[in-house]
Length: 361
Length: 122
Image (tube, rainbow over all chains, first blue to last red):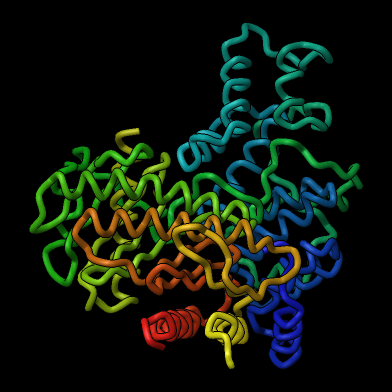
């Protein structure tokens, strides 16, 4: 929501006053950010991370706050932490991709942006940056971009106020701003602490609002996969079979079926038990339109990224989750199925679906 | 004499974590009663919630899963919960840290109360 209710602000503040280790710091920090109080939001985030050093959403919010303050190095540092904790985070992948692009490291930029494109293939800024990278990589002598070259214009379209590209040595280790609160460092995971080179505090950079940045709080047409879905199972030798993809789930329990639908509502894998194929196709086709409505609602209400839809009907419960490449996984269970169990079944189905989409996309 | 629509939104909007509540004519997508924060447009929410509920209802019926009772839309920063009450729907805008189970229960209660109020002869 754009502005939280005063009662919520009050409740979160009280909760935090009672218990400084409470997770209420996160909605409160988000609320302050939306209200334009980025200083307070930043303080809350830093304090919250002292208690919850591996909280992904808090690191992501901190990255956004640093980014909005023009502190790119710190933002990149936080995105790197987000990716260590949650490798499939779209915003962090895109942020790191553009950071590397600005620094002229095409290989790393492509690596991050290609992963981001798998999660949100419709993101125009990511696609444009990838086109630029391909163009540069195919050019005979890359060199620094000239002010009015097509490459430069493309960078500016993608990141309009990008600073001059700085070529770095491939062996240069990542940097950490010295101003990072020292008290947080011991709490960070080992990977986050292993930053070999310290440079002076990040130079102040002009504040900017690049057109390519879509805030995590802002509408997103296609969501990254659900948390459990981001960790795909270990790759197997053979590509997954669409007819048996969800068999391990359907063996027991109150599941009536699992469907993997593409963005047009066509079935990619799975099916419904005790129902003919046309019923599944009809469900897929009708749900496709419903998801458009769901995304529209999330967009209008500025609820951030769409995470899923739960439908409770007379005879069944449906859990619908976004997975990679704009696909959807639909888990259909008997009405009597426990709500928490269905959520976990949907997590499992999303993980299987994610891998399937990754292999076939 | 109490107004069942206003009573429903009043009760629902007082549940912790609910930042707004509405009763909407599902077919027309028009708000019947609402308690929303000023920055939220009841007209838009009514239309969006009505369209979402209609679409998902249609999908459920066509697949033989029966009449749709509730729809819960989840996102990073909150949820939208919709409970069907015949031609009406009860809509709750819910923050991301709310006890969604309790909100769901209250929305369903409100829907049952509205259904009862809409019965002929009541």
